Length: 511
Image (cartoon, rainbow, N blue to C red):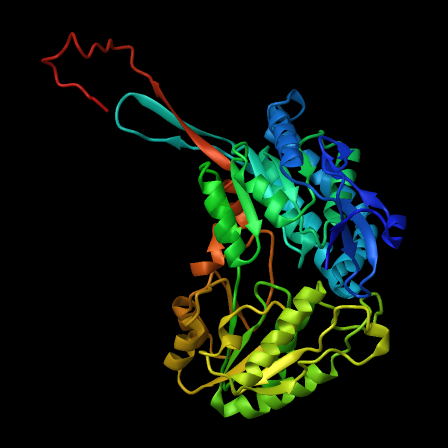
């Protein structure tokens, strides 16, 4: 777990990072530093500045200055699109460094990190293409008027990104920010700030004007709070827990900042009797345990038809027990650690809750006994069976390698269980019956639905939830368009004189 303290330990030998503000490394105003740990070993791998109100004010001021600077504000959409494409190319040239840095800092197996971050440059290319292709509207209106719209960058974007996908989630918001002509202050998780700090250096070395992309490191309760409350931000983009989103959203709303919030989830996976059990288990393992289960769309609730319930549970438990937990840099590792000891203890508390509620623990639920893993924050992939949807383990987000299996008999029962949750981010359906799948797409409460797959994204496909899973969308044109405000312009095209007060008796148009 990260700690704030004076530099008195062996951690002094690791590299110290300041905030990245207006193109410069800026030390903590308080002098305090935060230890950054490797989840796989528990060792301190870096120390970053512990930011607060002063640094946030400095970063927002830099972003506001850059917003109207000649270097940035007068750049044409085509020029900006070319720059953003260039940044994508720069990112690709540095991917190997970013792969290893993220795996070290986040603990995900290197194979996962490579597969995920290698797609991030396409986010910049896609948004650059939208910037180049963007057109404003001409609107037919009644009367002698030529009416058109102009879209303008919304302004300064506060980007609060989480620990589970540190670089990808930051980039999915940095990309439309830059392509739209906005500027930003990014507050990464205190657990995983290193790749975002490095990306800012890479981009500015490659031609991004100073102040356009700023990074302030620190805790959510201090740096994050100061950022969302700052009246200089025009849009808040946050990925995190529902309670964090509720607090941040309320604070940003007091300054009427626009918001995109991707929050918690408790993803239902509906498995029907016509679907091959082995394939269903393959997808269950991927959905539940990729990223050590630390994803908002983790396959948390497997709702399985009773005709295949028993073999599904048996095979899922056996496969989960066989997964190789270990060093994320070892090519043989399939599941890495969770982010911190605090998070591991949270997972283990849910294990005890499941037992107390009468669910059947069929896999995992323990810390690995391998002495080589003793320093890291590992927990075995965990599966509970014979779960009801009213149990705590079926209702609350665990955010770890943890899933439950719930039986159902009828389609109506399956949809009732799936929708009986305050969340609505992702959902998945496993069936060979396409008509059934499409019926359930219409009935299920979720912003994203996968049929016979899980966790797939694309820069062009919108991403976001309903209910307590947040508001707004990321990815796609929906996200890009949300980085603009729209100005309507109405031009009178008639030469006929208009005098409202002199022509009081004549019929005239007021509005």
